[in-house]
Image (cartoon, rainbow, N blue to C red):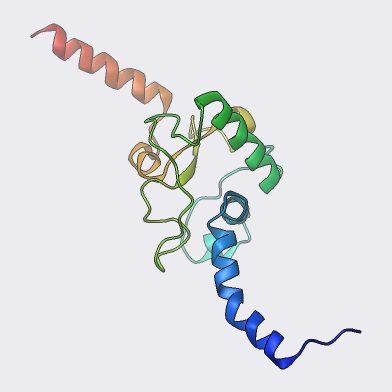
Length: 158
């Protein structure tokens, strides 16, 4: 069994938070935490639901962090970089200042269900900015169509 010196252990203890922070702000680390949060939101027995009265979401085919990263890479290839599919803003993986994982960083990557009535599944998710996803919230594609119809009717009169 190998032993580390006291100096070595002290260095590791000192540097661990820095290394952890660097990992969490990398794409791989960001998606690891995103996957963990997605699992909690889909687990009916999670304290996430018991203490917050939140509805259980359904995961129908997202297999893990590596699957999310694979889908993210496909979108980046499609858009020519790490951009929001809706707005084109460059997406980030910054950790917020003690406010939860990316909860207040407007440009952070967020997983959006295109149709919120369907579960998290490969053909129903895209990556967008946290800010846009918060604005969109629970608007369905049918809602969007109706909003456009009303908008067009109102502008046709002018």
